[in-house]
Length: 405
Image (cartoon, rainbow, N blue to C red; front, top):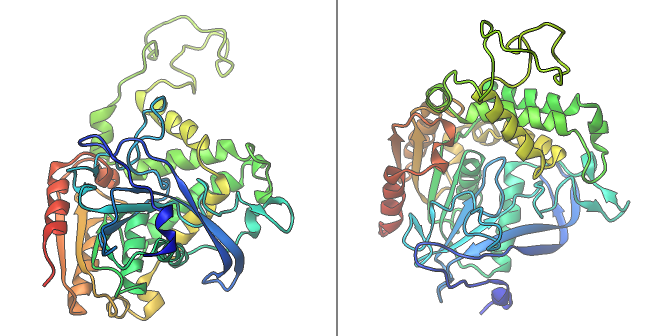
């Protein structure tokens, strides 16, 4: 039995739900060398677990989060804060990832801002946040830090690793870095190599942050920083997570209550600074369409939970993810993989489109690996893997039930 067993909480959830959960911190007290060669004198990963570890310690499913996610993927933290984890529909007793059967582990990535070490963390040498002195982070660095957490918990192997988008990138990296440790991989809505278009979207977001005067070259006080720039970055990124069809169905061209049209003749609101005297309410830059209001809400809510420098670091880690370039070719990259793979793509995902997901499976097959591909028809865009889908649940449940020969 591992000394870390006491660190593993075991909940007794109500039927169908994980229930109340709490986060835990893994503190690695030894130097950690990043791919860049930079060294951090120890780090912290914040994580949550759900379900119960079996006696052979081989029933763990690691869940890897996307860019704006964190360790809280299921359950609720308090009865007064009923907001569930970001994949609560997917994880729990009897759900696709069944916590009656599996021990589920999810950690906030290295470089993040929800309790794990990142630019917002305090540099013990200066007593101030690291800011841009924090080491450059890659997807591989994130996975290597998670492996140290798994070792700390005394896990014998991983039953599966699951994640979408950036989480899917981590899934693939897990299979390459630790082939004997990972038995199944389920990457969703992801890619083995970010495209120029996706890099371009990330760069626009980074520029929105860095051109905000409050960014101050990454040296801003706790609770301060480029809030406007970060909100704009989030608004722009969110557009890439949905589809034209889903936006049209959800909002269309509907106006918010009270919004005027050019021909409405509604009287001016003298309290609106952006309106010139005598100008109709429709001829202003105030929020008028529902989709505008929605995007502004997305931006405002994001700045209250995410650090701007972490956004820079994590998007850059995504940009540099290119398994083929790192290993000579994608086929060579997958040569060490021993895990069986199910890659899931969504027809309306234009950020990481179908072809990029298919390429993962085709390359795995060429490398002689066991891999399958599922393509789900949806109009919800890139974020389809996060939303309720009985078809997706059935796919994952079936894949996890298959016994390896």
